[in-house]
Image (cartoon, rainbow, N blue to C red; front, side):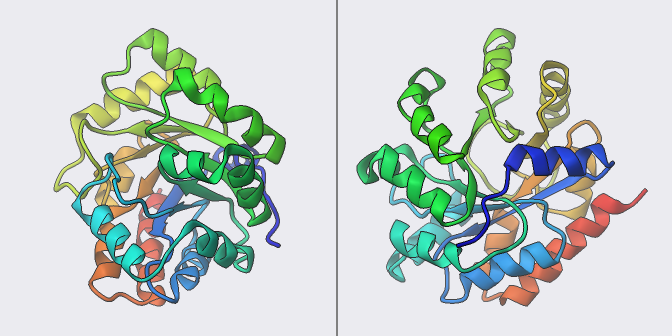
Length: 261
């Protein structure tokens, strides 16, 4: 079994040492060698890795992640197989699952939490679970040692933003723009505004996502934030046939951009 890392502790340690945080995404089950993608990301300098559990109705995901989920499901991906694969990864960095609450609910809160922790997972993102209903999930996550990461959008009002920051564990996920995930040619102006608001509201690591695709994007997004999630750009390469080493090279390019003085 992979070691369960403390997500917040590891990210804080790296952030406080002056490092900008990089969290690449992979769709679990996308290709027989998808666990090698996880290892390649870690070797290339990822600070944590987000693993998506494919779902048939991914309401927050754009066309690339939707396609990746559809292909993975067609290849036989399922929750049990993905968690089983993660048990043997031992990436050396925290793993964070991203999926939708329907899948977790049908698996059972307690079962999902315990099996995720047994697979070496440190945190969970449930983007369609309202903050007002997270109390159904949190006790089981806490008992299993899983951080529950909350998302904040550009439209989140200040009072709710403060509450989200207090409730979030591991890090706060800042949603750069309105709409679904996906690559953009330019970083949204809302990214800077939201990053500043989040940094003023919490000392948790603030990690921005949605629309971040290029080395220039990651540098711009981390002027005011602590780190970035990069998803669609990497999964586009994967859908085009990129091997784990190719995706590792792409993450290494993003890491190099973040490490520039």
